[in-house]
Image (cartoon, rainbow, N blue to C red; front, top):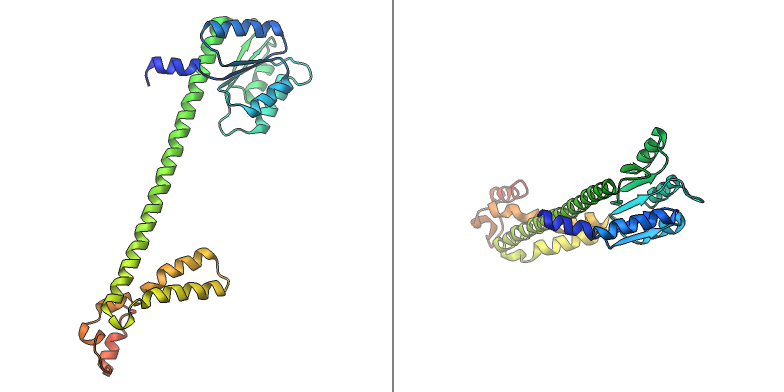
Length: 247
């Protein structure tokens, strides 16, 4: 992905700004609009911001700490309760410039931290970096899901191929013994029915239906002179015929 495409994608990111001070919202609005960010939502009410977070997809959240009713830590806790599969990064902007506040914010889910009054260029740089990282995670997640889908499809194809091989081998056994045409298929269906009647799990019943037709596959190894003999078998011939389960 070229730098131009990345920059364009970043500018199209959805951003949520949460701050109870209207002046801060106005400053950030001018800052983002000047740099080409137009998908930005500004909210002074933490409660409404949490509702927006739950309803919409955001690629970055800018969050104040000192707010009435619900402070920034409460907002972070609410975000964590919503438990998005791929939550947007949170950049804290606050006037509380102390180590404990920073550590708590980072421990409770924030990805970066800036103190007020903030440098405009620094806010933009950190915001763009966080958005780019988040978009990269999205792309990787989409790629992984696509890969998982392909693996699942390939697994189903292999499973279908196995079943086809079993069916063809069973059919081969039928062709070797003209007196039992379609016998193997019937054995599979009867086996499934018996298993269902016994109350066995559906998955096991299905496997049994697929596997049971293989019971006569060993007849492929029996000489035609014995397998296709029209009359009664001799003792020696019967002993050979009885080898088909072992085969």
